[in-house]
Length: 112
Image (cartoon, rainbow, N blue to C red; front, top):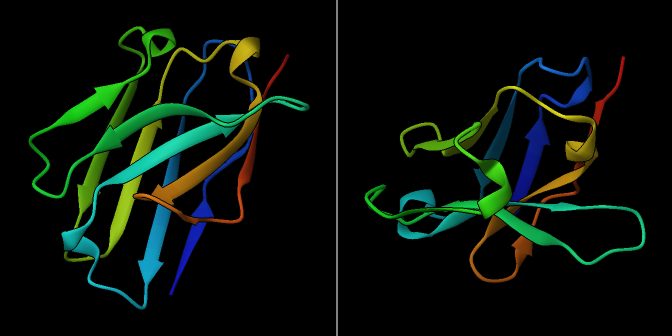
């Protein structure tokens, strides 16, 4: 049972990046999935979550319409499309299977 994130890296302010998280070893479609982020020295904070039906989606206030979470249960993958990125979005992003299964984290750095 694991989650593996991909798609991070260095992006310029105002740019976009798409994170992917592949889940294996469990029935992906039965779980709420989410993305969290963590700044150095801080606790992880919720970025976005999508329930198992895809009908209930939650975003943190700081997303401000810039990010979109989606899921493809046939592929066992959850996505986070991040647009109009700001330097303040620089963090390690973690995939989560509610409540306590975590990916290894992936760095997103927003810098010119």
